[in-house]
Length: 204
Image 1: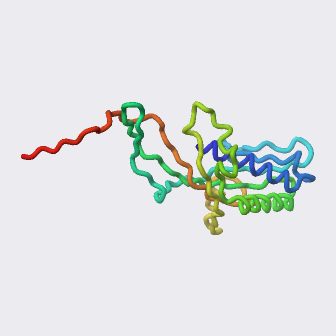
Image 2 (image 1 turned 90 degrees about the horizontal axis):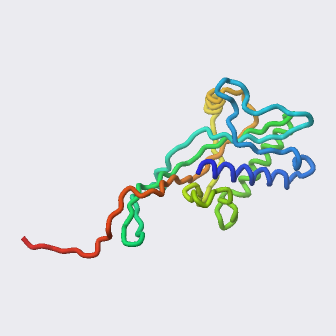
Image 3 (image 1 turned 90 degrees about the vertical axis):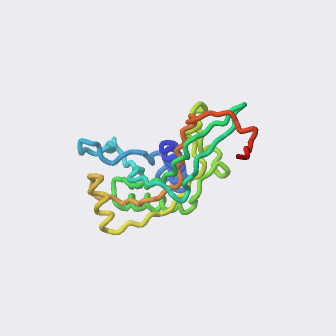
């Protein structure tokens, strides 16, 4: 589910930036889903291989359970049995989008396009984006996502400082978005039982 959501958003953002400023970005822009730093402390994104390159790095920095969207245990009837499932877990993802280029002004331009993209598209669902789950294999339907709602998440200077210290990198032009709600559901039933077809009441 997380991979489905972030891969979809990265592809849409890359297409948006290339379309909005084709002369500058069409052949060079890359939106990458990645951590910024490796566990050994080295930079996770490789350097330029000649010519100016523009990158946006999408990094998952936090997850929180969405209690408002909490679901109760549910069931479904299959043939002559009732299958019971544990309730889905609904999570909100906090994603940091960092702009990388050879010069600071280009990074600011990238950052502006990122904000414009989410301002124009605060909601992603299959009605507006029929290809939302195109990369999900048919035999893995539990990886599909229904709807993504994105909101700009403000951070204080102290929170920003703590975030970049935790990442282990120097600050770069970036913006933090909250993406909700990503639902995790195991499609394997926890219990199967015959349906209730008759109720008897006995008097003592």
